[in-house]
Image (cartoon, rainbow, N blue to C red):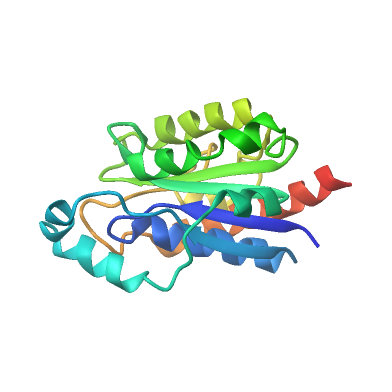
Length: 199
């Protein structure tokens, strides 16, 4: 069985919705899947300034926190993050910065990798955030698995060939049915391509 881990950060729930869908898609493809969130690092004052942020943090308290061991376990991985000024969130980056030992030992290499994101609007940095994560995957020696245009359903979700992305416009339930379908497809594709990589 192929092991897939979905590691994500979400402040108000948009990226969380996508992470769940990616995990579901990988499970549908027969993978053993872990869904993991990275720790919240923002100060309480910032979190409490946005009731949706505090509510979401409370809602996901039961989701396990990601550790480097999750990446060591996985044959393939998906990273998800809201965009922050066109780049990944500091919270996800902090997690990535804990992976130096695994990178040094080659543990992260030759594994399928994909990414997904959300931003306030369609042109709020979705593509640049995913492409930034592709830079990370390249340093890891991973095999990048974008959805591309490999299924017509991707066009209904906006047609982002790099990874599923949603504009939130401040809505904590922003992911459309089409976007969630695309995210499930992305997770399924990750699991299937990772299985082929494993041989």
